[in-house]
Length: 183
Image (cartoon, rainbow, N blue to C red; front, side):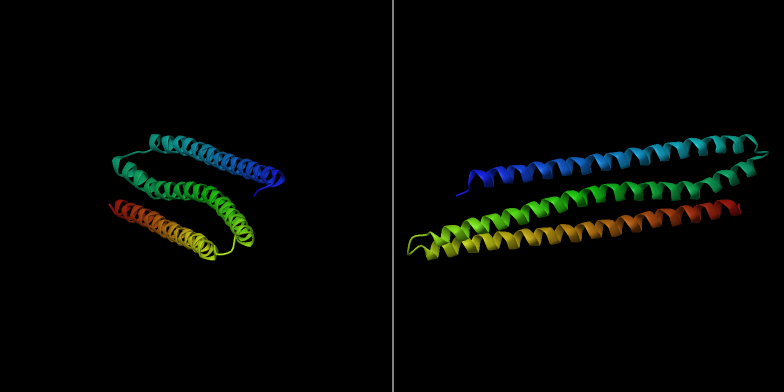
């Protein structure tokens, strides 16, 4: 049986975790806003520069070369922006996952302590029931660990796929730009 002090301590720990996660969420939003402000400033400056360059073009061939020269940097900047966005999201998600895992581990430890305490005070002849409960808890813990491993593997695979797609897009832009410049 839980005492009043244990319940208060658990509530306090849960509130601290909640406030910590809220802080992490705000940090993620701040990083996202900062990234978007930087991207907007860069886009505005590049737009002004591009407009000046277009106004100084003397013929269609020079315009085509100018446009082709802008494709590769645009693809690279888009890939870099996407990478930063992904990093912010995965970092914030990792903080939430870490907190959830810590809470789950703590809850498992407390549950096992309650079960151990109950087994010490269990009446004679209830050993089989206690063994069944311990076995069920152990199976649940193993299932949870398997799910966590699967999620981690899926996350790693998604990141690898993201990196492959980003590099392919940049390389395709380089190829397109090189082909357009040769014309």
